[in-house]
Image 1 (cartoon, helix red, strand yellow):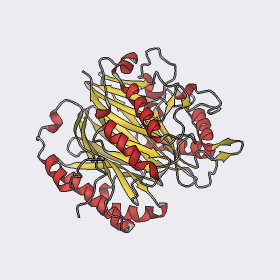
Image 2 (cartoon, helix red, strand yellow):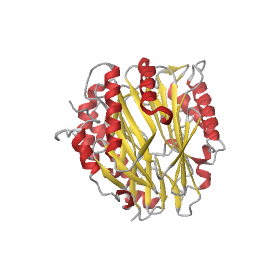
Image 3 (cartoon, rainbow, N blue to C red):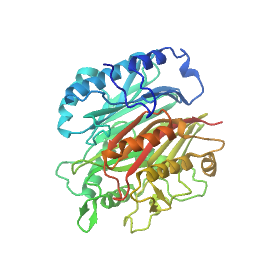
Image 4 (cartoon, helix red, strand yellow):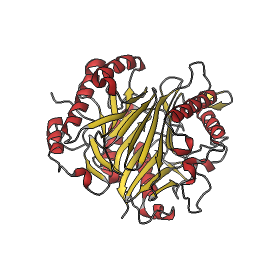
Length: 434
């Protein structure tokens, strides 16, 4: 039986890994010399050309429902087939592992060590069950081994250099086990992240994207709730940080400049954090924090939502030459600052994607000073969908397949920061400046 790489679009004929691999292998040898964009994409993987840094994104889930080891090995075999299908050597530098049972982490680590040896990628393990019913799923980012310089800095940071820019990723940051309260967990995690960034020659001033996975995100803590305490800690820690070293241009729309971000739930009661930072001396680089005209900026929310508002931007756009990279924050069915379409998964999913579409639209990018830049839903190289309940998977996937097209998409089960929200979506789009 051929392994399954992610899940094929609803209503489409599922292609075998071999068929897809053959088609990718036959792609033109100069695929990376095409204009910057998503160069090649199907439901399993996307080949993208970041500025002079050829990359591959993939989301992999097993077809089998055997033991955890069998499913995990199938995923790793599928990954090797994807990498072997390229006509250039690719190195996996980052991976996110979605686990149904956190107790399987040690076994997963052993398998990954056996697979990659001394070049094991930076890994983040999330206790978020794959919504498709598998025991494990994998999201990976690989770079062209001949174009990129990859450096590891301890257990949690990696630097990737190429094309006059340098990316620093910190993943799998966790607070000390003694930290129980969300405020203390967040502050401790952010300090540890700051240390990891420093080890890699970076800092929060260069951070463009963050992820916060908080156990019991909507559970009470004292006279408030855990997500609100995360927001309080984040706001306190961010005081005085000039994000992106003054590069962002807000075009007078708002005063806040913060990274794009996702704050989402996970199993357990701890916190897992990740971030991405970017460095460049290129004069043709611009970094712009984005807001959605249909949504109140999160950092301007009324105190009833959180005494200290969530300090993040709806998205961050990086223009380097004629390439536009847009990180879209975790997005839900919120208009202005109110939740819309209570108890209606279909309408919440459509509204969420509508919000993303308006955020990246030509008119909104122009309003932020990015003209004639443009991105569409078809430009997404990778998407993550968080579902409150696994029974939502089929219906949500049908909508996402229709709206995003064949895009590598990770579906996992997690609580969302408001109890009435049923779905949250994030992603990264790579497009051209026309």
